[in-house]
Length: 192
Image 1 (cartoon, rainbow, N blue to C red):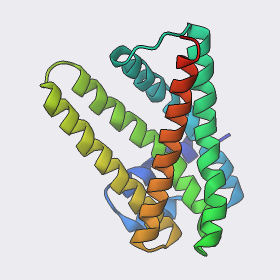
Image 2 (tube, rainbow, N blue to C red):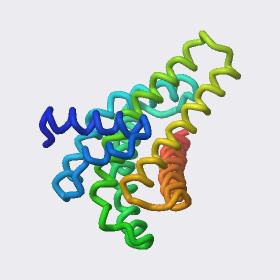
Image 3 (tube, rainbow, N blue to C red):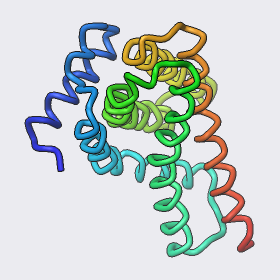
Image 4 (cartoon, one colour):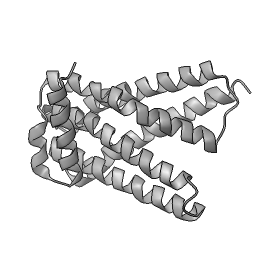
């Protein structure tokens, strides 16, 4: 379990990374201990994830009971937190940056907290009805592109890789997210 001090340092570090400050990698140890503690970020990001799911269901309702929805979403959430780091074990080995793997996943995991709450704010604002639908979609698109840029910067900085490799990592994360979303949605359709 990460201490409050460790969580504070990590969140400060990801904030600094969000300002594209390369020196912020100093806040993330390249150790197995830091790697495992970074999964505490899942607890911090979960409320934002839950609210994003509720917003999604408000816009695109599903015909499934609450137990099924809760089961599918919780399992999908856990798989998302485990699958990306697992895939990155092989990927970082392939691109010869495995020596920085623990630092990369540590920063990546803590950054999810910042990303989740940022996207929740943007999604809530877009869904609030205070902006026209077209503008809300544009705001969400710009926010998504900002998150992709942020993720790419984290990958490039923490792994010390080229921009094309960092882009590949962002695409891998996106493909995992899309795949999990499609599987989750198909599980809701299965009960209809």
